[in-house]
Image 1 (tube, rainbow, N blue to C red):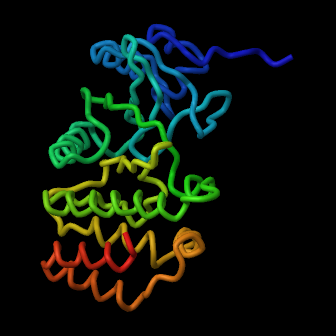
Image 2 (image 1 turned 90 degrees about the vertical axis):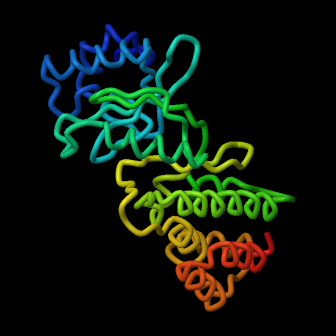
Length: 257
């Protein structure tokens, strides 16, 4: 019989196997593990919950990227999300991503940043599904209205980021960076590639992902019906020309939102 591994682990227990392998992934030296445990404690995180959609060995996490791994955790009685920098990350620290998250939060977008350190981000926990399983799981009466409402909110979030001057950088792959709650509220995640210095493309990237490219847009067409491609592209060009409010309203009207 396979050994049962506790999933909810106090931070002081993270120095043990198999937990240490993920806390300081992928090279868990004693120093790297100790540093991350200390930073979690300083941020008020007292437990890590090794549950999530991504399996890594005998444990599970919320997500894995080139910069860090994302875990579910507990801070007192509150569930939080925790992103811990990989030992082999090219980022020297999490400070820049924390800065980008603060900017997104000022624009009213993304999970709230609750604290940060050299190697750790402590964030609001967002309970939801990525876009593909979310839309596939919708059934019955009202499905079309629910999809339209969620997409309207997501497009408006993209426009708010644009207005603030923060380019997310990864919304052409929104299946990796958007979660939708059971109530249909979308949240844009993961600001490790974001920038306040380059031209913003959030709204146009979201619109192209939803309606114009890839397998996901085919699922959308099955729910909402065909999208007039040339008309949508003309509105996206209008948006890029600087007439953002006119273009946003035109897209929303065209898609019968």
